Picture 1 (tube, rainbow, N blue to C red):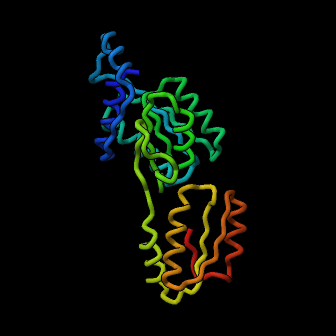
Picture 2: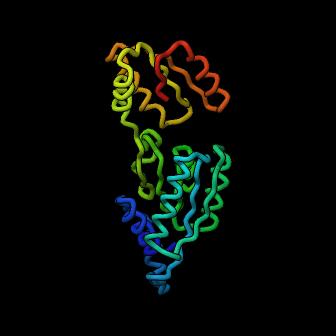
Picture 3: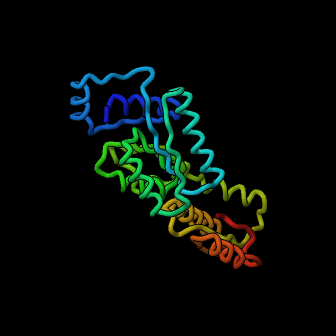
Length: 230
């Protein structure tokens, strides 16, 4: 893979997203490509692989944002392989293996599990990975990697709970509803517990990892809590 092409592509994306991207580890290949007389410039074509964990309005918007940003930065130069993993890790692995075998110039995972899967499956390659919709990149093991960067959508938990109390200062018990298989959940739930303990507000903790489990957990809170943080 031509390092100049990688840098050009990621730099264009970084410009639009206000990211600072530094990619290393491709120097020898760059020298080889340069010796073969490869060139860059207007008209260079790039292939970008996007793996969205599951269909959801917020994640759909993140995916479209990447597509719009790259098309604006590099009009007519980017071909997208836009895949949806339907919430399945096995699908993520199949998707990224396809990206690697196709030699895509950039991988964009949307949501934590997709990003973790992409990083693991692309290990040993020099393909840059730029993620989005990750609440806690450090807890997810996505920091300190030379070819991985992205944006965090971390919650301001205290602000959200402040709004809850502004709406109803008499709240006595809060339900905490989350997926315990999501690394993104750990930090905001810990912050919520600390906040509620400081305010001497009780909480009921329920988890679920499927739609059915979430419905059951939510139903179990009815009549027991005055508000729910999810």
